[in-house]
Amino acid sequence: MAKIAGAQARESDHDMAALRKSAGEWLKGLREESGLSQTELAERVGVDYYSFISQIENGRGRIPSGRFAKWADALGVDRRVFTKEILRYYDPCVHELLFDAA
Image 1 (cartoon, helix red, strand yellow):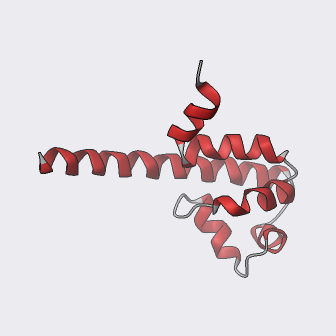
Image 2 (tube, helix red, strand yellow):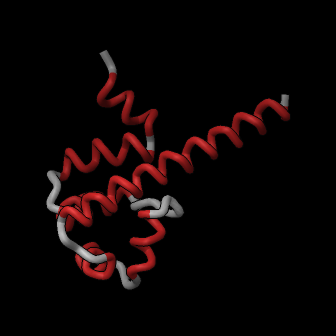
């Protein structure tokens, strides 16, 4: 039983890593459409290092949920639209419960 749970956890970790990478690609596209460099976006969202932006865009990090509004504003995206889309990547179960329920 423990082997099955471990395999499911690894698969889930792999799936979440792929979703974070997709989120990063989406965020990078928004940043580029906004004409912002990573440094400029870092300043707008209040982080000290542009490397944090790079980590998120490469799927190695994620935006804390308390910062979604700041990121949406910085990227010129409606806050609700931004949050709905980022949840699709960061927490697909919550996204499904909130937005895909019949």
